[in-house]
Image (tube, rainbow, N blue to C red; front, side, top):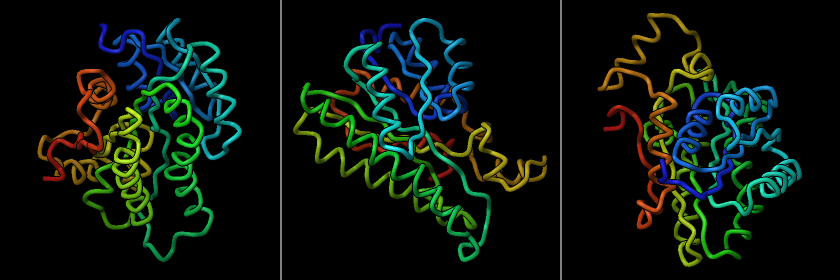
Length: 249
């Protein structure tokens, strides 16, 4: 119950799926959590489930000013930010790489990549000034072992992995740790997009590539996130941890 006691954490895309799972785990571990989502109703639903140690926030992670406002609102409520979790992301439907249109590519780039640039530009100076901080990026097994038909999504998550390692090296001198989680596909609202169509046959085919035989769960991400963002992991930085049931072996 006390692994994150006294810590403050802002989680993007926390209204559902992995982000909501991480928020639940953080509150259970004693943290005060900002539940940030582009959809305020989803953020409020997660907040109502978590209780008084959470704050619902609406923000568009592709807009720097929107993030800035959310960070200021969170810190006015919780105090200086200790932990940033860059979880917000969008999927790509299975598509031949040459047929992805400009708008879909730009959305993948903006949400999966540019958003981390924006949050880092806003939050890192605050962490440097305090001499401590913790950033956790949610990447994907897609950046480690790509599936065909998801090339631009795969590339965006590969970018997150490289950015995580580079951030870790650059920010270590400021006592800021940066790590990432690489989940395999989870039974979340994004699953149907990844698979193209959600049928028992397609699910079975997908699951056949995961040695442990199941999709990842929000709780799986939450448990790993608590560890990486706790003082127990004080010597851990630059790690991109697979939460994948053995898929990337």
